[in-house]
Amino acid sequence: SGALQPISEVASECQKHGILFHTDAAQAVGKVDVSLDALGGPDMVTIVGHKFGASKGVAALYIRPGCLSEHGRSEPVLYGGAGALLLGGGQEQGRRAGTENVPHIVGMGRAAELLLMDEGQRWKNNAKKMEHLRTRLLDSLTRHLGKNVVRPNGPSDPSVRLPNTLSVGLRNVQGGELLKRIQNEVAASAGSACHASGGKVSSILLAMKVPMEYAGGTLRLSVGPTTTEEEIDEAVDIIVREAKRQLE
Image (tube, rainbow, N blue to C red):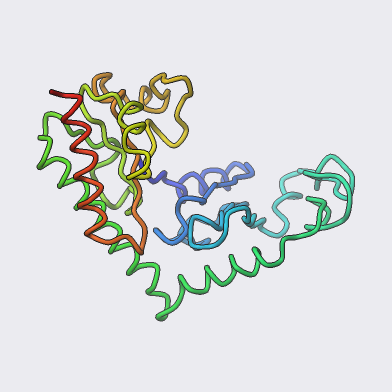
């Protein structure tokens, strides 16, 4: 749904009690502020390259210096020990053996630099554009299908959700069947980002208390900084066409 969790508050509580805290910021880079100060100073942060313009298959893990040995913790044994993710060579400071993919690493660094261009405003401008496009997408679906059919999932407050992600339930529409019919025209997914397989309703949607008549027709749609209004309108036309076919 794009809901943002109170990471800084969680980090603060973990610090008070000496708990090691890691946050997965894969979806957030380039959309919201992921500076260490904004995140409340977590011990570890993961970012993923293809979520902000780099190639697939490259990511980074930030580890706050000293955090692994604080509060009586024992620094993990690397270089073939229990703290190594992959055994072999000493790459990644002994944590993950194997030759580093230098071109992809450089590409991810460059993608990060591009987000910080225009005196740090580039990613903020992108976020504003994506929020506008996501709003256009939701408003257009609602206008064509009606408020009784279209139900957005997640928080309505834009300050606590990602600007680019829309999870929307279509009442009495079979999301899986809809996706099969539009798969060559619109890239989308059914259910949640962690949806269940086998056509079952996602446990995430059930935990969010999404009504069953909407959960089965939930679509997850995302926009990017290069998405255009024309592409949004075309996607809406295609989704509406198939939804109306099912509802007839």
